[in-house]
Structure formats: C-alpha cells, structure tokens
Image (cartoon, rainbow, N blue to C red; front, side, top):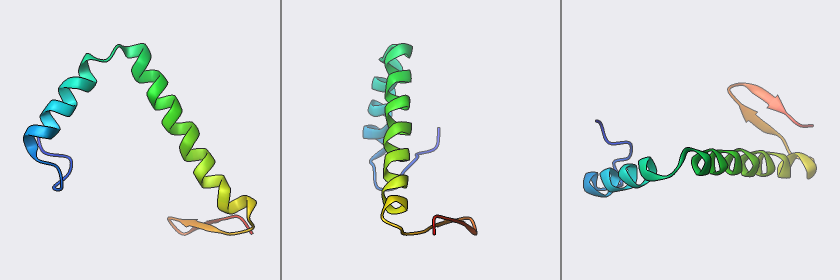
Length: 62
C-alpha cells in the first residue's frame, strides 16, 4: 500500500490504519458523520459572514 502522506512515517501510518480497522463499523460511521457535520459547519461560517467560497470555479455565497 502506498503512503497517504509524505509527512507521516510509514510505520506510524500502518499503525494508524490498523487501529482504524479495529474500530467497529458503527463507530466508524459515527466518526464519518461527525466529520461531514463539522465540514458543513466550517463551510457555512464564511457564508453567514457574507464572504464567498470558490471551489473548482464555482462561487458560493454573495
């Protein structure tokens, strides 16, 4: 398997992946759901302040 980040030592990355694989599926789903919720919240903060996002040439906001 290729390393996901050049900033992380391969042994540490392998350990991290092993630990994630041991987490029950229900807990992993909770973690993903939490990540999605946090991402949405972080995305909407500038919008609520009247600022714009530009992702892939698409403008979001005012």
